[in-house]
Length: 551
Image 1 (tube, rainbow, N blue to C red):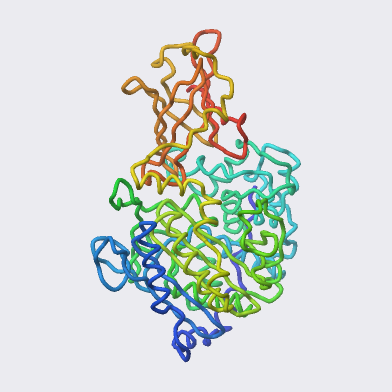
Image 2 (image 1 turned 180 degrees about the vertical axis):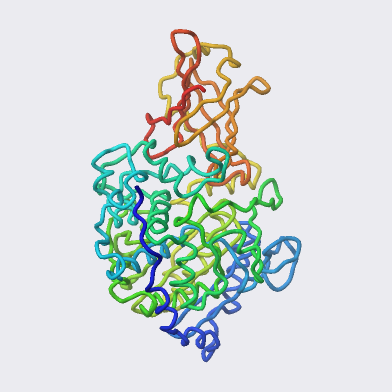
């Protein structure tokens, strides 16, 4: 039985709190804008290098706001602003982009509002076990984890559950996926750590948080955020669905991937399966209002809730290279990464999808914050980070010779970016990991147990659902189209029933999903291939497999 409480009665008073200073400061421009010619030139060159059509940037400095879109990429031969949608729709400060994982801070803030109002939720706290609120839905493979994981555990990525990002989305029983479907699939997914031992990012736990809030309040998370946060802050161009964004007077940018020398459209993603984790669509004007509230710890979020949101909960597992140039460890609070830069604590979060990137960061002590959006996946984050950290270094007066190479840091975190540059220069190749998975291959390799066509068929795993394997031009292949991240596989035979699966996205090729992983079949005593295993979740290690059974 799901716990359902009455819709919130404390939301209406929040609307009367008023934050007119936010509306007023948007018109203040007493100082010269930091978004000057030098910044535009840097962004221009970086957009050209990484093949990004356009980005927008917002800056909050005390009570002053600036918002601007970048100049166009040289590749487009257009003037003025970057490209939101080809051929000639410009990026402006009002252009809408997907916020991706910057959504997580809003989801955490929404739950903070519930917890901060004991009149409505007398027994709710950060330490409330999730399963006590949605017992039939929130079930994990580990009984102790099911019983003990709390709200703050799922919001700080310390549940023991890895990403499993390639499992969700698409359709369930003939209908579009819902947050409830995603939560109920958790029981079928392998955990890779004990709870509260290691930080492991998991989008699905934020979908669980979204579903939890919807169950408690009787409101969708989008409606809750609109009433409790966006409307009080004057964020009138922030949305929680594609349909609402398309109906907005502001233009929703088109996402692209630069592939084979051209910009290719990437279909707009259905964000319902990632509700709470990555559903928000907004612009730098509205995010600047959000930043202003965060920096000043102003309503509608209470002071005690801000303290909870910003308190670090889990050290992040980073190597020394990825920490540079920070001067303190990285920790995760509730929807925020926090660390120290040149003696100043900051809070930040990135957002990434196949065709959109987002960044938000603020320094409470300096009352300084920045946000940025772009319309390519990951590569736009590179441009955004270079621009944002130039502005931060300008603010701190860091000499040019002491400034950090942010491209180098990004390549350390995302090694496939090296591949992207190789691919642009015609050296297209996969990162060859065969030797890692199969260090001892017999010579000559053993033939497959069965003819290749006998491995073909549909295989099923309750969370990942179907994968259909077929033979084409002498090679085993597979497509997974009915999921959020649509993939294609080419299975390269290694030895016996062991293969390497060369994976790529069907909608945004050559980006984050391009990889080579181990795959294998199980053949029963009846001579039938009855199982297909694939190393599709990296946190499971070289030996870990997600196993599908033949349907």
